[in-house]
Image (cartoon, rainbow, N blue to C red):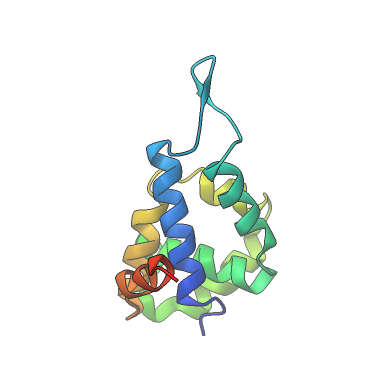
Length: 123
């Protein structure tokens, strides 16, 4: 069973897309620095509990075709067992993080678009 809400996954997707596009990041010596979206994304992932982190990694792996959707429980167990580096560093090092998370959600029958729309709806 997935131990993270679709809204939290959608939040990571949105921030990962912004991070990849360079929104709110500034260049220093030709490199992105830890400001804006990068910091916010890293802190958001770091603040998740261990079950949520393992589920987020599992969804990414399913989207990357490392595991099939019907292997969700095994993917979560593996993510918990193999966790070595901080989850935020591992996930943010994945160049297609947002795409893999969207594909993983879709494979699990969740709508990334609906969750993203809910998060971006004006208050």
